[in-house]
Image (cartoon, one colour):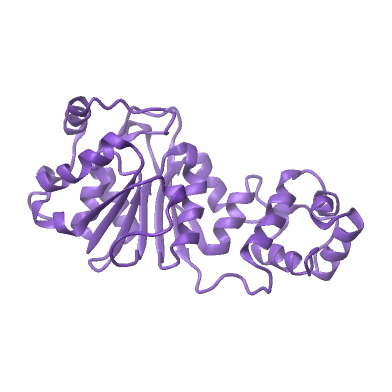
Length: 288
C-alpha cells in the first residue's frame, strides 16, 4: 500500500460527509450498508488475493470504500452500481482520491442481474460487498455471465455465507450451495463484525471465497437442466427424492427410474447429494 494510504481510503467521517453532501440515506430496500472501516477493506483486498494484473469487477460499490482499496491493488476496476446518485458520484470520488489511477477505473450504471457485458478487458476477479437482499442471485449471475472470473471474494450476510459454503449433508446445504459448487470451489473466508458498517446491520457478515473450477461437472446435461433438478429437489426438501422429483420427471415412477439410472437412492434427500449427483440425475431426466 502507498504511504498516503490513510488519505486515499474512506473513513467514517469521510463516508458520512460524502453521504450528507449527496443526500444519500442507505436504504433497506437495496440492502445498503456502507463499509466505514479502512482496515476492513484492506483485509478484503488481501483475502481476495488481488494481484497487480487483475481486472476486478465490483458489484454495489456504494460510496467507494472498497473500490479505492481495489484500485490501489489491481490493474483495473469496473464497478457496477444500480443507484443513480451513487453511480454519478463515484467517478468523482476516484478522481479526487486516486487521480493517478482514475484512468484504470470504469463505472457501469446498471442492475447487475441484467448485466451481459462489461467494458474493457475481461474480468479476472469479482470482489464485492453484495447487497444482502440480492447477494445469491447476483453472485450466480456474475459467475454464469463472466466465465473469465477465476477468483471471487464476496461479503454477505453470515447465514448466506454458511449456505453458500455448506457441504452435502449439512443442515444449511441447499440450492445456493449446489449452484455455487457448479462453478467453483467454495469456502468461508472469515467473519466481519457489525460495527464496520454504516448503518450497522442487525446481523453479522461473512466472507466467502470461490475459486472457479477448471470445468463444470462432466455431464451431457445442460446447466439449466441440472439446476432444474436442484430447484425441484429442494423445493420440498423434507421429501425423498422420489417424491420431490415427481413433478420434474412427470411421475414418482419416472423419478425413481431416473434416480436409479444415476446411481442415486430414490429414498435419499437433496441435502445428501453432490453437484455431480444432480448432474447425473439430470442426464437421465425427462428430456433424456
